[in-house]
Image 1 (cartoon, rainbow over the protein chains, first blue to last red):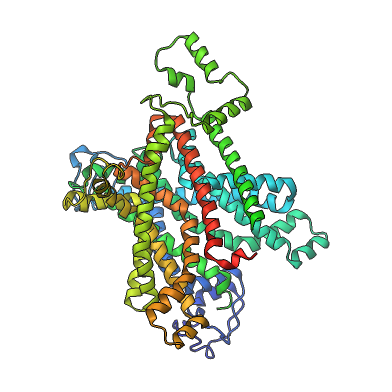
Image 2: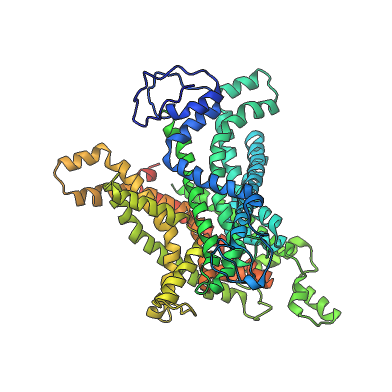
Length: 325
Length: 315
């Protein structure tokens, strides 16, 4: 495909646009040329991915957020390659060194390299965020699907359980579960996941009830399509977009909660390179060595802002209101 | 309306019952034997058996739950095994009012700053005041409160010396000193809600200002201050209440983090300290109290809707 320059004006150059093949791959590459053209003469590209990408491209905050989160994800993935030191290697002779040539972002009171700890901390933050939200999503999906499909007293009982989970503020629930389960990365993931089960279960159930009553699902049921096939092929694809947007929004909550718990001393245990732990450690040295809490603090703030922008952007991009734009 | 209110009340009662079972269960799951913890390091088997009987721990689980619930409702929440203080007094009369004062002060602050900022952004849509307010709002609502607290202590407490960094004075014992101590925590906590309130005010005001009835009011020659202040803002109230109610969990999250950073002796500090000290009775009291509070405030927000929107009342 030719590289048509991106035009942001409404309907500009719509007539001159070449007719696109209905190939999702090509459309993704050409999305830049397409993304803002209400009433465009070119047929919209088929393929759910291409359509989703086109919507995301229209939301400026989503694009900014995606860039920030993408940058952090890249740092996290490449951590073993681009780190200059072992993140848990202590060197007391190098303690409290300001940012410089050997230690790019300085060292903490144990002489651990802040730059390397920052990279591995990004791994941990994103890892815990995605893992806990993924687990919570899976649990919520099972509860919501069963409640929505089975109905009756099973639905009633499951939804009262969800009510009870939602009656606790998420941070209290996470603290309570950490108190029972103990400290450590895996325990924190479980504790956070449990607090996310409630909201996801509620969303899935209401979506299932909504989709269940739509004619095409009823028709499929009448045609004798088995229940499981009905769920996988017809219900899930309709429930997924709103669910993924919700999941995206909750990842920032998960990362904030995790770093908060570790900051309190009831999350991940030292010397794990965790941003919350690093901020807590740097508190005592805030006037002497502000970089110790500053480096992870600013990184956490930037990542959270990026995730918030991405989440809000995705929500706007996939809200029914923007359907016809 | 009364039928729906009664149904709501019944549902809330049911939720509270499940919450109480969950809280009771929490103490059962918590590691360690409560009798051993209460007795301390040295005790005789006889003393252990006597205390087990006294606490009703030799009874079946459901009897234990019944006993616990009846004691809980009567305000007998047990004693802290570290300080020997009564947990009920500690949680309800000492910690809860502090958290409520902090939350109320920051909510007031957030409304005071967020609403005018949102109005300004909406009326100057697409120009620099809008960009300024919108960017700051995202930053404020996404910034981690515990790091923001550290920065504020550093700048305004240590470097400038405007606010105290140590100790705490309850505002109802000494108003000026108390507010002085609560100022930085309240500002920290307020940042989250200020951003949300500004974003919500901006978005809903822009929507309202485009509606025909606003054009009609303006055509009648009403001054802009009355158009916005009287006619438009009334319609912004609902989304504002919704966002404040929906993000209550976020406020509590921020409150816990802020309290820990500033060592404000509220519920958040109480719970986190208790977890670190393995005082599960105190943790349980905190869990139960926050859940109770959370459910009741959510109910209140629901009722506020009908109060603010006459259209909901007629149904």
